[in-house]
Image (tube, rainbow, N blue to C red; front, side):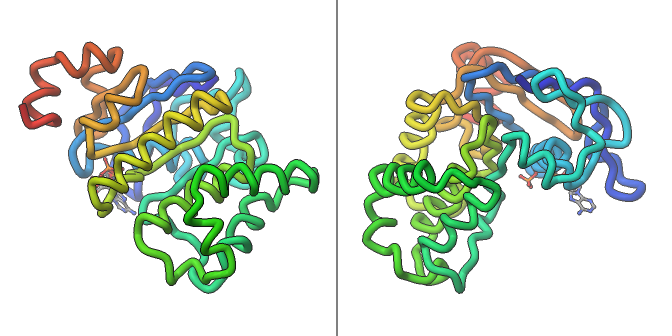
Length: 235
Ligand code: ATP
């Protein structure tokens, strides 16, 4: 579904990605692991066209997308849940969800999808008329995921969904990630510092270090890998 071939991305003179190659197949959950500054967020930003790569190629369903504008990339079905949630704080929960469906015209399906989201996250249904900014951190993360789902993405990019959340909420968020993948066949590329949780839901993963992919394997093998265990699982 998605192929990154030897991507190099810069911020001015700073080279954040030094030639990374990643593949994601339809229906997979793939996790990107790595320490702060490894280049995980930059990888997502390169895919969605916000920080386009200087060289290399990004193919989505065999179509080259590395020179496309971010809105055109969203229209292809690639949607991001950004780090720090970035919901619209002064809009209600329902208004935030409506904005997620901005590019869609299938009103009946949109209504059904809102109902589906309220089943996934009953707390959002209870708070549907409340301003996004008044929700707790965990609820805002649920809203950010839901808003992305309202675009009916084929590929969902998630940046640190567990950041700053209480353990019980983190567990719930990861259950939902698995459910979205299983029920809707949504392909997910997941950036996470919480390697333990990420490897439990992912099929495969890539470990990044200073702008390079240093290990790529199945989640099961990564969990057994000594370097991963020591550096990212704290075992
Ligand atoms: P984190 O978990 O801290 O977000 P990360 O693995 O996502 O880490 P990136 O945020 O992609 O890493 O950063 C990769 C490199 O690019 C780092 O050296 C970082 O300092 C640099 N970088 C990131 N954003 C910018 C920016 N806007 N301007 C300049 N350099 C940046």
